[in-house]
Length: 267
Image: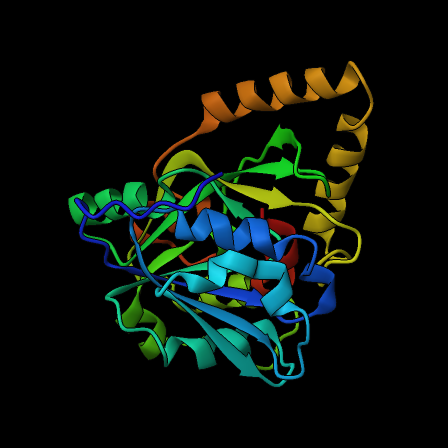
């Protein structure tokens, strides 16, 4: 994948990429390359742990892109890291990406078109499940809420409604429920993210991640993998829509036990 910046397009999106641990090192080059290749991106804030010693050699020539800035900070929960990074954002829109995920071509440009047409505050996108090597194994349904790496949100919205900084996992679901009826959210039912499943990720023990890991493990088996990819694609095609189950008509508040279900719904 080559890094291109189309000067004919006026980008309005900043990307916040988080790679706070050494476990992202094998993947972060591909992540940053995919983000810088997005024609909608005007700024990239890469969050790394303050004592990181490998980022320069890992990124190489990508560091020469003037849109990329490195933000060194103490290790903290994901929400706290993203909240610190939002202070550096200079664009009206922000998109998040974990340091082991990969955006598909034109991600934020497609989402921005949705946002302008539907006059919303947040546009989520659908995602593939990939194995640790980056091979696409399945289509995810993403019926309840999108993965954080698939979000594009108004910057002002994230400043008014920051992530909960005390949560080490489930911060996306907590934010989603807390902003129900306040933030206008829509779903772009297109596959715009390659979500990497790896055993050492922070969220690997959540119910949702355990399900994903089982699907990917089965998909790594020859022949069975092709069946899973075809079957999940068919399900996705027949169920895809422009709203999330928790946010039809800009969102109905989930049931009273939603807080306990967040880990199960983060698809």
